[in-house]
Amino acid sequence: MTFKTLTTLLCIASFTTLARADESRFEKEKTDKRIVKSFDESASLTVKLEYLDRSKILRIDKGKDKAPEVWLGKRRLPTDILWLRPTMINSFCLTIDGKKIHVPERFWNDITGLHLEKMIVNKKISSDNDKIELWRYSTQQCAGPVITRSANRGTVLISWARPEE
Image (cartoon, rainbow, N blue to C red; front, side):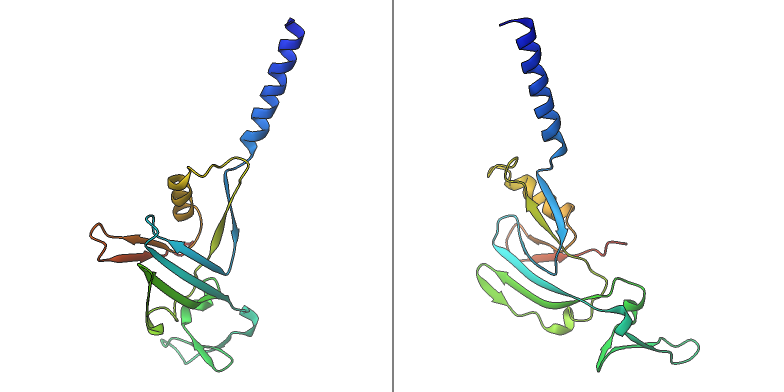
């Protein structure tokens, strides 16, 4: 092999490596519905967000030192929707060990300002062996809830931070 051939091969290999360095194994995009699973996949949460049109939200001031009322049609909304992202949880379905667990609406239907993103796996770069990294990325980099099981599997923790917190 000549020096010129070797140099050409090295240049091609370098450009290929640089091109792949720009590609990410995981990407994210905004969504209104997401299924989140615990690491052992024994618990899952299906959640759907409703994105409200801020121009249709009606604010009624009740006077000095009183919180305003906020309405969307005939539906009363929490006042924090005025300064947070205009989103509300629309559906919330928890499943543990294959059994659907009923969570009453009063525990989730008035939470506002949340954001959901879904993860897209770049199949060209990622392998099926990336489960730990995939789970870590989806829980740390994508906006949305995180569901965790305790060691004795008796407790499920659901956490979801607002982006501005």
